[in-house]
Image 1: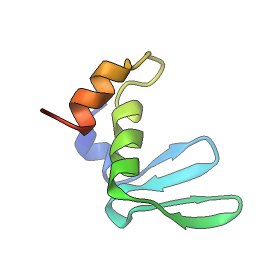
Image 2 (image 1 turned 180 degrees about the horizontal axis):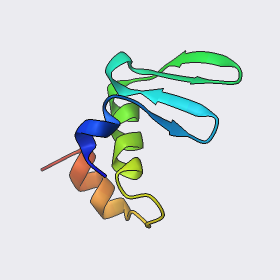
Image 3 (image 1 turned 30 degrees about the horizontal axis):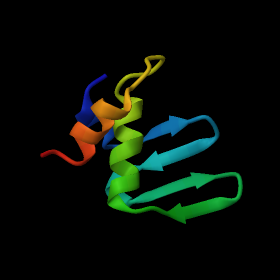
Length: 64
């Protein structure tokens, strides 16, 4: 999946993830999330159905 498409928003179960707004909205309403949290969700959403290792996540979220 193309990352630029995900940045427009995507569904994660009952939750609508809106990266540009730093917001997720679900049955209980909207929640503000931090940029690192959005980055983590994007990293996982880019590889649906795959296992993402801690190493891959560390390299993606905290390079160097």
